[in-house]
Amino acid sequence: MKTILENFRLEGNVGEVLPLGSGLINDTYRVMTDEGPNYVLQRINHAIFKDVELLQNNIEAVTSHIRAKLEAAGEQDVRRKVLKFIPLKSEDKTWWFDGTSYWRVSELIEDSMTIETVNPEYSYYAGRAFGNFQSMLADIPAQLGETIPDFHNMELRARQLKEAMAADAAGRASMEEVQAIYAKMQEYMDEMCKAEQMHRDGILPKRVCHCDTKVSNMLFDKSGEVLCVIDLDTVMPSFIFSDYGDFLRTAANKVAEDCPEIDKVEFDIEIFKAFTKGYLESASSFLTPVEKENLPYAVALFPFMQAVRFFADYVNGDTYYKIAYPEHNLVRTRNQMALFHSVMAHKAEMEAFIATL
Image (cartoon, rainbow, N blue to C red; front, side, top):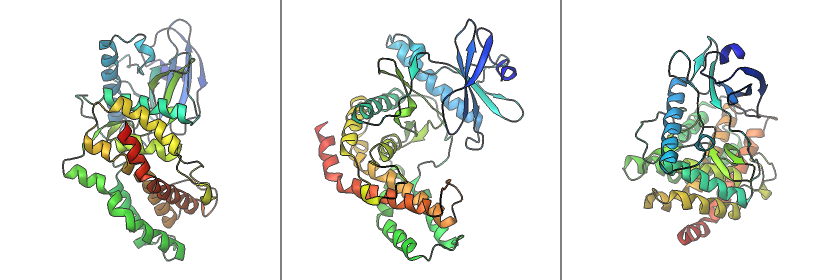
């Protein structure tokens, strides 16, 4: 670890290097120094993020733009309000390849914490933080690339499901329940794919989005105030539906996404209201009428898209998602379809609430 760190422009002498956090994608370490700031060292998951140069260029463009906005606004303590990545000693790029793995270093934001709690209070903070994040990046001049191409492309997921059913790799496509779920999904497929069509029609823009919105992807100070948005690997061009709908898919389901007790799956309208209030307080300045009008669609889109992905994986023989038992992906599919239907049942209530804001 210390040999890797020698390649970066660090202040102070490196002392302890200890594991940090419980992230599922990258390996993360806390780096302690004797005099300078402390740091975060990460091994980037190259299996998921194929183009590390594009990944880091995206992150540098975003953090530089936010930092300039904060400084122009006279923000105090900017170093705690946006991530800062450290360049190499030999050149200005912010990643190091050791022949096997890719590494990067950022300054550790001291006296900060993440929160896993999902309740109306923290959902409101999340909505405000992610809306503000998008707002600050609405005028970014840099052209960002897709770190995971077609990550939230519903048309692609629809094609993948159709191909899975045709291939029937695991011999499951002819099962009665599989046929019934597939038929039910087809009833909504065209409607759920409308974002891509609206984009082709020129009425729905792509914006710089976080694409992994959850409460734990924000840093809070000790008083509970949001400092900044973190985990920027998935920051890329997308529809604003990505950040808005994906948060509510997980936060507003009253049970876990693989809970087999389908009768307990329910859309939590209070979480929706809190997140939406915070989001529109900070994002309304740049959202178009079409984007605002389709926020309820975004809430329905993400459980539907995830159901399609779980279902296609089940039909394919469970080749993508880790499973704990043979019907795990089928249970996930039932769960997410139940959440989708619960969301659809609240459509009028969602529209009425958004109108009040």
